[in-house]
Image (cartoon, rainbow, N blue to C red):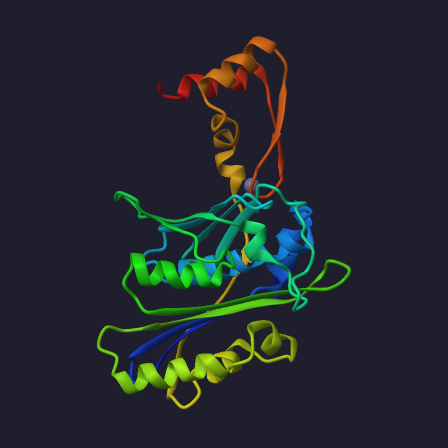
Length: 295
Ligand code: ZN
């Protein structure tokens, strides 16, 4: 997979009162667009969420933990789901990948209307521990806004999320990425005021990336006037890994549906929702998988 240029960084600023993440994700968004045949609108929506998922995955504590973010809306895109880990791997899909809408008056893709009203759910799967899940109503459906709201409401962390995907006329991805900045509990008021002033005056994510700014530069612009210490960098990629868990792909239809398939007595072909890879299951496979399921 040619995801050679995508990476993310993390940083601390203002004497550790601010933590920050930034990502450039053009290649993996382009990859997702190609495997899922995404419309321009779906490319922008899923691209934003893949970028955010990776930065939120970077907040996980352990290499085995997984982060899943779901947007369930009443707009034409319907359902977006992204899963990321701590190691820079992400996968995701849009349930209606061909959905498209007219551009907004400002010329931008109308992701907010594409998702519509509904809920946002964040699930953290911890290795050997109970998963944590939190659901909130959608704010605008623009994804960055909704995640900002999520951090404030569910995690009580004042956060600003900026995300952007610029889709060329031919559907290819011009640039994609974003940033997340968060305030630590002991942050001084003057730091809060300065940061919010910065956030009110910065260019958009796509404006910065389109100009060829690096993500380090992007954070320097967001955190202008603060001392910044870059504390980590990692490569990121679209990676599914379903080969190792291919039985799960068919098992999700449930026992009744499996019994129907077994009754049909034919080989079944199905594809992975995350990466579109096709798998064939013989009747013997179906029986074995059915028998492995609990009632
Ligand atoms: Zn897959």
